[in-house]
Image 1 (cartoon, rainbow, N blue to C red):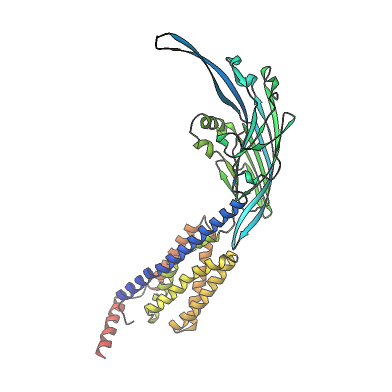
Image 2: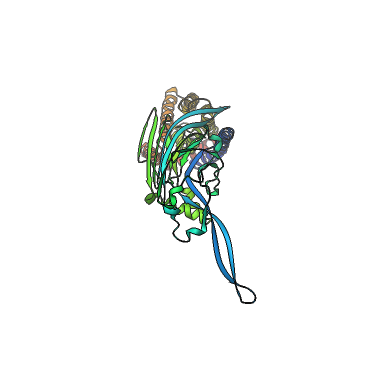
Length: 457
């Protein structure tokens, strides 16, 4: 060793800081490519249909009501007034059932892919209408207009069939627009004025059903409006992620797809209260959040895994430099800082290769090719640096084992922290074991002596 230990440590530390520059640049490239892929997915969805959210149906009964009241004029005399106010009565389903078969397809733009689905949904249930629509006083002041059924569909471009509502043994055509601000976009069916002609003599149970063929991108959500809500979905996509405030009561997932069944009630959702609060006030946060559904996620998001991989880059470089330093200490070899730097750059280029290849081939194959290329290149170079092909082969085996561990860390999301902590502990233990007999003072002294000898000659 012809340099002092302090200078060597300082040089290695500076090299690691300098290597942060290419690592940060590669990390920025990962973020840019991920953002661009998400933009491509949005572009594909813009030309077909976005994620879908289904809300409804809701039975709406418009009415006019006469109001009479007295006021005092300037002469302090009572003046009689009469006015007409218009409003709606809203009835949510007592039971809502949806049975859906969902098939998926891939839409590609360049090297990027978006996941689309086609859901064939059969929807049925019933409304319960109380006597006189629940009006108990001043019934003569009310005039009820033609009711309608509204369904909220977040992106009506995804509707692929001619919608018809079967209600109370009659058929009605749906028309564009939900007619309710709270539902957003959607459809509505205007009912016959006499459809509930018996409502003034008795309460009514009103069954309904319709079929909805819906196309969307990546997510399908449902708002549980029913007093009882039952939803069952079948799909050919084997990697679902269930979303929202309510997880499926039952689910089955295998290589051929998934089946999921949700069941909720007013007691668990409190949806009627939130719906009413949103109608009467501007407090709609709880109403908008009460949803459940499924996201058709990709099993391997290459950008997420590449980003997670590069977070371990500094650890890889530190372990490699520590191995070099052990050879210097234990075998009395000399490794120049430039050689440290070249090996560090090769380690950094692994992540760039991984990103570039994984956009064209499977992530596992991209990882295997990138790691193999880096291990061979570094092993070949290190065999000359360490003055032995056997040492170079051993170094390559160790580096390959580290890449294998890294892939395990990327795959085991739930145990990544535990595995990383154990790896660091084992590496530290090995370093302490191998250097347990090293006299660091003598190394520093021998370095100074070697320097003095060089100056004398």
